[in-house]
Length: 160
Length: 195
Image (cartoon, rainbow over all chains, first blue to last red; front, side, top):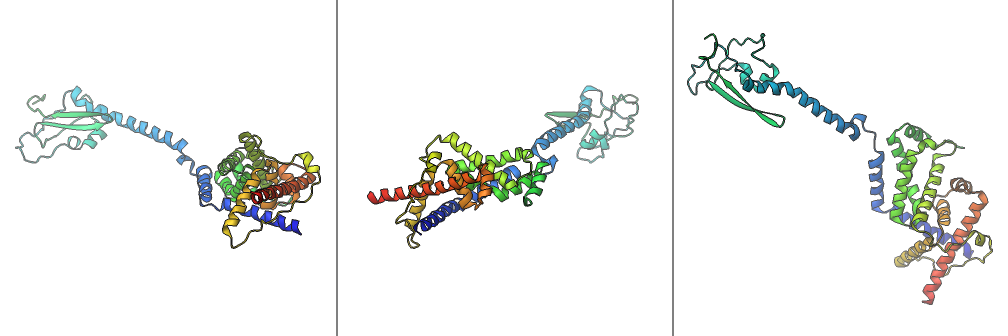
């Protein structure tokens, strides 16, 4: 009888000791953190860091390649004679609003339709400047800001 | 063998479904931790063993042949991992009985004056502290068998399968584990009384 009592006491104590161990508040946190870290819900395979990071890097590279034609176009005016049209309106007085050719007035659009004056297809019929005969603007493409200068010189334009 | 309630998750996990294995971890984390703690008797080491066990089990899940229950296999892996870890970190500190001693016939141990009083919380805490100390003086094998039997409530047969030992060894090891625990607790008590 004494032995039974003793055995039961030992069993009881033993269970209490173990129970205390897993009843700790931080025990559940450890468990949760472990599962989340190693065996959480399966994320979409594209969203895993091992896939996502290289994919985003590739996208960035492709994006920069997409910008390359625009960059070369924006550099064009400094390397080649300006596009000049016989219909340039230089009669505007300072402060007077003029409508400028869409390609020149909107930077983004200028890049969408690159034009070179060596291209026989380019045929600018009409352009006006709202800021005078010289228009300067700057565009950040990649790391190097590009300065674009448009010079409207009707007197020097061939055919005038 | 009865059908294994974990087999569906195991098969999904074998196909690489980590979330399915996460569910198994959720089911058995406490069990593995308690086994590890019962053997190594140290909180941090038990946590490390537990987490290592699950990571290794996931990596080696293809080796699980499904002839036994997943839970039984997990018991075996966990106990072995805990024993290995404990032996690696703390060479030999136990004063446990050897196999030869297990064969000896000792007089039953009588514990005296250890009954916890519900009114005396301090005394209860002291008893628990003694229990922890007594457990630390058992061998890993005895702590493992105690935890499987006393905490997990496994049958002798299940313990035999989990530890890959025969039925008779389970009985004798369990008997001497309990006996040794009683002896250590009694000795502690006598020391306290004499001091």
